[in-house]
Length: 235
Image 1 (cartoon, one colour):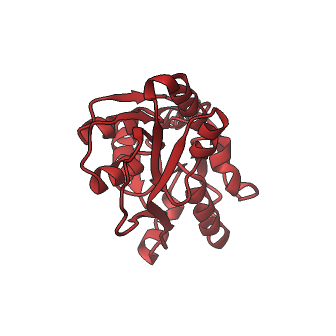
Image 2 (image 1 turned 90 degrees about the vertical axis):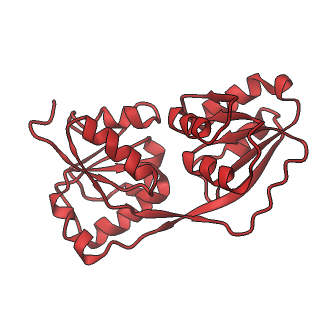
């Protein structure tokens, strides 16, 4: 089933990623509405120690951008979870960039396959509460990993003007479990029975279990393009 009119698509993710998603939604013929439920907050005064580090691993473009701001080194090999993160790495000036085009487990497997080539520590800059456990996945495949917290994502309260827009939303896009938890709180306070909710994965959508909506659907694999493909399909 395809939509018979442009959908009003609520983009819940933090900036600057929200704007990139809006461009993709608009290209599909729908109307993006950016009402972030999260904001990115850098951790102040972080010291980046590259002693023994031979590669960098990123599970989000936010982590990549935070590292690029905190450290001028662009010589290390970058392993990225997907195409958007890989593109952010190239735009930041990294030359050796590989994308797993998948999830955290796929990224860990790709790094493990190059363990001998790396020959040292993999630094994993990211969020205080990462959406996936890359450090654990790498430890399970015997790769030495050093997590580095560079930012946090914090819930954002919608103002009255933003809340007034919610009844006009057809679809909400959810990129992370934290965004899903925040959305669940919003919908408990202000139910939106017309709203269809699309998520990057079943794990991302888990916090929304039991929330009243017009339907919930997860992407078949955790890439934004796969989630956006669901826009023109019934839940």
